[in-house]
Image (cartoon, rainbow, N blue to C red):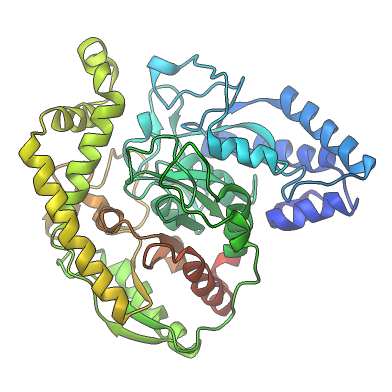
Length: 465
C-alpha cells in the first residue's frame, strides 16, 4: 500500500480518502515513513510536526465519516516551503535570525491549502531568505537532488521539489521571483508553475516580480492545486478576478493550431550547456506531432536584464534592507550585495527601469500577437555539484554574481509572463527542463500544452533510482 501511495497524484490521494479506500491516517503514516526513509539523504524536510499532523489526519477522518462536504485536497499530507508562514509551526526563511520564529498566522497560500483539506506535516528547505537557485543555508544545510544526491536540487523551492521528486508528497507550494519554482522543477524532473501576476494574490502587492507557485510530479496536479490556491482576495487589489475553479478542467492531449516560438538562447546569446540544448532540440518535434507549429522566434528581451536586476534589488531592499545595519554579518555575502544594490538605487535608476519595462512589455505583447506560446530552456545548466555556491561558468562565459547563471529564468520573470517548467528528458541521468511561456493570464494554456507534451513523452514517469 505504501508503494501505491507514493505513485499517486494529489487528486488520487484525496479521492481515495473521500471514497474510503483508505484513511487520512493511513496516508499520513506512509508519508511519514517515506520521510524517515529518504529524507536523511536529501535533507528536503527540515521541520517536522508529527503530532500536529496526526491530530489533523484524525480530524480529517472524522469529517470523512461524518459524511459532510470535503475539500478537494481533503486529508492529503504536505510539507510547505519554509518562506511561507505556517501558524504555530516554525518558519525560518533559512536564516539564523529566524531560527526559532513561530508565526501566529498562515500565509495566504497556506491558508488556502489548509481550507482545501491539506494536512500540514512540516516545512521544506530554502536558501537563506530564498535568495538564489541553490538550496543551502546555515540553519539546516544543503538540500540535494533525489536523482543524484551529489547534485543541487535547485532553489529557492528546492526543498519542496526534492520532497516531491523523492515521492514524499505528490505536490507542494513554492514561490518564484527569478526562477525559484522553475529551476528546482527542471532539476528534479517536475512541473513547476510561476503563474501570472495576481493569479495567486500576493500579501505584498508592491511586488509584481515575486509570485507564489505550485510544483508537482504531474501537470494535472499543478492544475488541481491551482484550483485550490488561485482566485481573488482583498489583500491584493491587483489580483485577477477569475476564480480558481477555471483550473478545474480536463487538460488537452493535443495542440492543433497552436503557434509556438522556440528560442535556444533568448535572442541574447545566453550561454546554455550543450547537453541541455541537445536534449531540448531533440524533443521539439513532439510539439509538431501534437499538431502545433514550431519556428525559431523570440521577443526582443534586451531590456529584461535591467528590469529584473533593478526590480529585484528594490524589492529585496524594501523587504530586508533594514537588517543590514545590525545584522550584516549574519547574512550571506551574496544577499548583502543584492541589498546594498537596492539601497543604492536612485530615482533615475527606477525611472530608467520603468521605461525599460514599458518597452519590454510592448515587445512581448507584439510577440504573443503572432505566437501563442514561447518555449525555451528552463535552466542554462544541468544540476551542478551541491558543494558549489553557484555555477561559475558555462562554456567560455564566466559569471560574476549568483544571479548570472539564472538568466534563462530571470529574463522571463522580467516580462511578467506566466511560465512553466516541465520534464523534457535526461542527460547522463540528470533531468532537463523545458520552459513554456505565455501572455499574461494564459496560465491554463501553458498547462494544456504541458499536459499534451507530458503524455506524449512519459518523462514525468521516470522516478529517481
